[in-house]
Length: 96
Image (cartoon, rainbow, N blue to C red; front, side):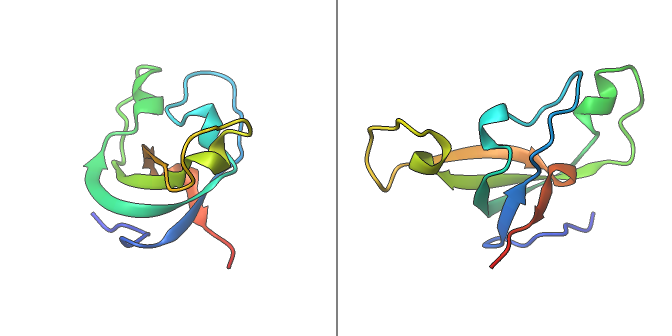
């Protein structure tokens, strides 16, 4: 498996809203986070949901977001973070 992103990389989640079964939460689409872990490669769950084989396998990343940037009305601490596992096909390099 060759992962496109390294630990510490800033990534943006694609702001896509396709119909059907997707595994990327709505609330992180279009947001920027940091890769904290590379989980390995797994069959694509979006393809598996439709009875396909899910190949080729996709790298899965653990991405950390600042919680206040995800929710407009978030009232918690400024240092609070949210971690989401996201497949590589949903990620792009973040703009500097």
